[in-house]
Image 1 (cartoon, one colour):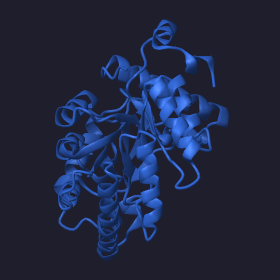
Image 2 (image 1 turned 180 degrees about the vertical axis):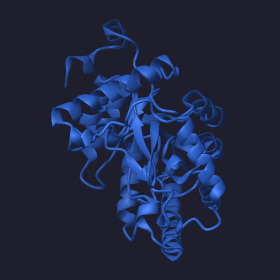
Image 3 (image 1 turned 135 degrees about the vertical axis):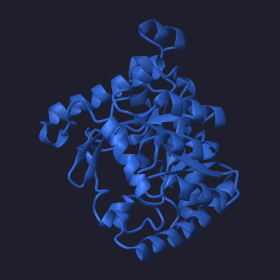
Image 4 (image 1 turned 90 degrees about the vertical axis):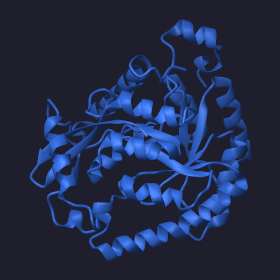
Length: 333
């Protein structure tokens, strides 16, 4: 524990600018390696100007951790949200983590249906339909549990569901405890317009991954990189306003991954295999967005850097994003 962790708000304010109310997802520090335990990550985020964290919690044996996490978060004035995998025949594990999260004072849970990317994981429409059926089975189990525990669950648009698919997915459960973790940039990879995604999912928002992305073309489609807030093309202020008007209490966690650009192979046949009636209009609009917002400089390739340089870039991206959130988006603690 650093001395700063024990300081009161007046002393902290005297040390520098106000902290941002924006928190950190665990992926903000993927270059640094192993993910920090929840309590350590909370302090780490506090010292870097964040207002909260998304963390993982153990299903068993964590009573002392849960109590300490709640006490530390309350003392630092930070929020906690908990990430966990959907149940898949292990409902007791999911319920135990959900109950631990509630006891730790977490505002919400966050999960995903797909850990990969739709256009990479599936090669046929039949494979996609199988995934949809499996997702409904797992979501149904999750909804029964979160309704029993009474803690909301935000499902992230994780390069799996288009906005047009995710809205009826969430509506179908008619549960006040099931909603969306709106990721601001993921659906660019599915050719959705970012503002349309925000408008569609805002009424369901439980939590949110704030990010910015930069793009450039390549022979198979386009490349996409997470970049520091304000350095990409997403209309951040508009998206923030849309979500806040619909769900004023939602928290925003930075999801800034310092990694090589992702290939979005939207000019290949395999990319389109799972999309059914989605047509070329989406492709035309997406490519126009890419061309109109092409990054001014080549996208960074951290894999070609030394580890020291990658770590420096990661820390700089996070620092810049915290400052932008505080100074340009008004996300002030």
